[in-house]
Every structure is written in structure tokens, then in C-alpha cells.
Length: 293
Image (cartoon, rainbow, N blue to C red; front, top):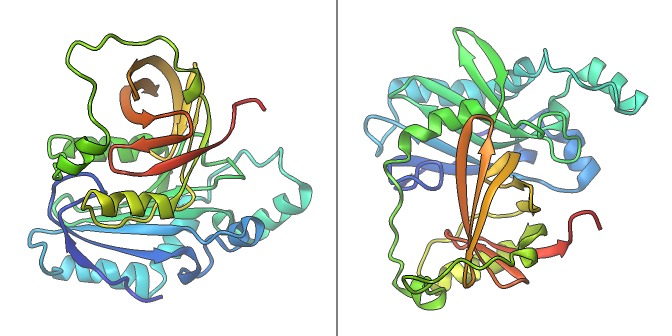
């Protein structure tokens, strides 16, 4: 596997105004991982790569060594396989699949969402998922290195790391965005009926990047993302482990959802007209069906 092409970026983890190097690769480029997933679901998910260095315009010796180990010497595959060794919860699966996992490991059934190399914190994080199998997906999966070993932790491990950058939000030019999706006038009362929000929403990569082009933003990959929202629960792209809904507030077409992720209270804001659900980064989702249908 080759080291992905990395370019200077001002969007660390896709949403923080922190200088970094960023790139992407397809699951099919990574040996051993997601092979069963791609066969079973016919998808080839994209993984985002973020490098945080002391000098973002170049890679340091520490970073270069990590890149070579993980990508050129297949250390990324080995890290995922090792991190998943102690994973259990397979009893409900078909006997043939259980035998395959016992023989080959679980890493062929997972795919990577993000790889983070942070030279400043001396941290390497690998964010994984297994939508459809739902062994890891239920609580999210973060593989991290401690000493010479790799371990699996829930998505909380990633959230604790990412929370340190909340004070550096990206502030794009929102002039055209605000013209297309004007915020509700000051003093607008919250409306009670949010029933049109509830259901499963699946991303449209094409519509997302058409919209982002209209407001003057760079294209992004938003393939195979979703949200499943009900009056009591939310899960999806920015909350893969999901959580109970604390409150839903609607003002015109803007909806704010507060929910719990373990011990953290998180907030997501959407623009929604019943047929489209749009996040504030321009990601467009279309409703596919209502929950429980």
C-alpha cells in the first residue's frame, strides 16, 4: 500500500481550524481489511487521513517513520487486526461467519473512517466501523497504540481526543450559505412539530458537492453516511454509537437536537424541509423511510 497523497489543509478532522496535512484512500487499497465488507455490501468506503505536525508544510522524521510503518509496511492492517483480537459478541452470527472470524480475524468485516497521526501529542488513532455487522458499530470503535501494542476502545476515546480542538471551529465564508438557508429571525418561538425529521436519512455525495460549490466551499466525500432519528434516539455519521435524545428544538426549518453520548451531551444542528436534511457543512441527506417501517 502506498502512502496517500497528503496536502496542506486548514480543516483538522474535517471541522477544526487547525493546520494539518490531509488525504484519503479507498478501503480496497488496504490489504486484508474490509475485504468481506466490500463483498457483502458492494461498497468501497473512503478513509480520511489527518496528520498534525509541528510544521504542517512538511513531515518530520517521527511522522515519516509512522507513515512508512502503517502504509508501506502494512502496519495499518496489523494494527487493526491486533486491536480487534479481544473483541467478542459474535454468538448471534451465522456459524459459517463465526468460523471465518475464528480462522481469519474480524478485520475483514470492518472498514476505516479516519486515521489520525498527531506528532505533537504522540498519538495514532484509527477510527473503525462495521455497519451491517454492528459488533463495533453499536459503541463505535477507536484503535490506539500504547507502547508497542494496539488496543480497541469505544468511540469515546476518539471524542475525548477531538474535544481538545472544539475551541478552534472552522469559520468559512457563510454569506452565500446564509442567503440560501437564512437563520430564523431573532425571537422566533420554538415549534413543537418535528415529526418530519424522524426516519432514516442517507447522504447524497453528488447533491452535497453541488450545494458546496454553490456556496463556494471545497468538495468533500460524503458517500455512505446516514442519520437515523426518532423522538427518543439518534445515531449516524457524527454520532456513530448513537444516544438518547435530550431535546429537539425547531425554529422555522432549523432544528437543534441535543443527545447523550455516554456521559457527554452533544448537539447537532440541521436544516430540514421534510425531504432534505442538511448539515451546516453542506452535507445533504435524503429521507429513505420512517423508523420502524
